[in-house]
Structure formats: structure tokens, C-alpha cells
Image 1 (cartoon, rainbow, N blue to C red):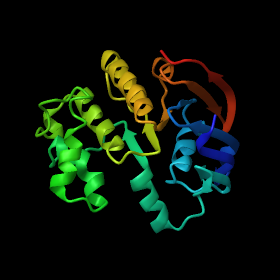
Image 2 (spheres, helix red, strand yellow):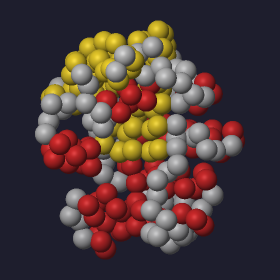
Image 3 (tube, one colour):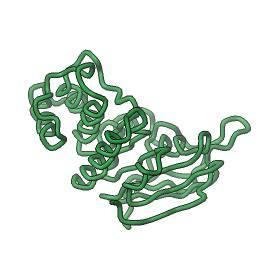
Length: 227
């Protein structure tokens, strides 16, 4: 597999606590990776380190072969906006904006005029089962609909990698399955890599690979064809 994103020898400590202890991981285009582990295992630290939100104490993070963990904060922030997409448990949509403007926001932050950004954002609504909901605000959406909007926002910039941190944690089982199936399939169709932290084995099973983390170390690594 040709890696889009790789972590090499990643270490991170918080005081006397070791969050990452020399972790190696890689993910390729159209590849989906689930990171699992008990609370405090280091799984969220690993995701945030790969996403450039946390800087490792040691090791390297490589995006298409170029090191990014040593970039200055301005360049790293720009990289996160342009080449990464994010889906969080709560969605983190802006409540005062309609759905189409929430999706368009990353494009507008990159300087695209509002009308053009919204036009591009609207293209995602039908493929994600959101047709007709463009002008609804987050408070008028169901949990599953809000997460679909968050997925659209993550993909709007055509990212290299989408990071999802417990994206189904606030959803019921049926909606959770619908959302994770959509997330894995649409990132694959768009040629993006997906890195997802989840505590739910049923959710993880939709990914191509599962990485188990405990005490900052990889304890198991499974690869299979996602359902």
C-alpha cells in the first residue's frame, strides 16, 4: 500500500503517563483504518497526532512522504484546512448557519466567494441523502442528518485524509450503522483515506483495517475486506 499518511515511531507523554510509545501506522488512499482501545489507551492521542492537532515528542508524521509534524503553526493550520477533513462525535456544526453554509464554511475560509462555496456545498446533499435540507439549521436536523452534514463539510475541500473521532458515539445503533456505511463508502469513492477512532466493534468492522491500542502501543492489527 502506498501511504497517504504515516506515523513513524510516534511517542507522546503527559507527565508520567505514556500516551504513545513508538507507534508506527500508515493509511493509503481509499483505505479506512479504525483505531480501537480502552479509555486512556492512546487512541485519541494517536488520531490527533496524525491530524497535526498534537505534536509528538518523538517520531515523524508524513503526508505523501513529506514531514508535517515539524511545520510552523501557521503552515500546519493551513494544511489542516486544505488537506484534512474532520468529523467529530457532536458534529460541531455552527447552530446559527443553515446546513449548506456549514458545509461551505471550509471553502469560504480558503477564500472562495460565498455564492460559489454554497453552490459547491449543495452538490453533496443529494448523494448523502440530504436533498431538501440545505436551508435547515442544525437544531432542525436529526442526529443522523447532522452527522451527514458534518461528513459533507469534511469532504468539501477534497481532502487527502478524513479524521473521524467517535463519529457515531451520539447515535442509536441503526443510525450509527447508516452513518458509518456512508462515511466509509463516500471517502473511498472520493479517493480519501479515513482514520477513525471508535469504541464500537460493529462500527470498526466497516473499515478495511482495525488497529488495537493499549498503553500507547499497538497490540493487534487486523486487515480484512469491509462489509
